[in-house]
Amino acid sequence: MVTDPIADFLTRIRNAQMAGHRIVEIPASNLKKRLTEILYEQGYILKYKFEDDSKQGLIKIALKYDPTTKQAAIRSLERVSRPGLRQYAKPAEIKRVINGLGVAIISTSKGVITDKQAKALNVGGEVLCYIS
Image 1 (cartoon, rainbow, N blue to C red):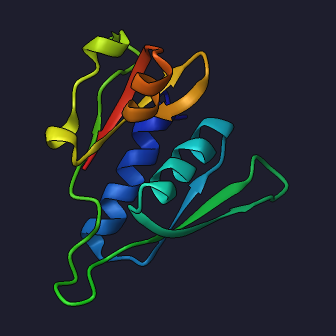
Image 2: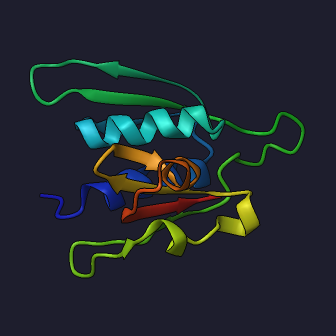
């Protein structure tokens, strides 16, 4: 049983990249589906597919690598808020990841969005993770 599904999601992607895999399969949930969509929108993954099975479903993610250097598009995945210590931020307090080159994913009252969208909508929330 996984106590922190977001950390499990990030760890599966991190491990698959370190092993050089092209595709990673992750058990689905609505939150993980939204995280996957954000990764795709920001250009960190090649493509994704949501599959339904008899249980909770499956997310298949095609990881993105540089064609010449074979280096992964995602440099780091860092979990910020965790079940034991939740991290919340107001719109003005949201930190920029690598001086604006990375993305912070935030769970707000408007849904799960990026740090730039949260600042534009002027909403704060729980900072889920940093991606660069």
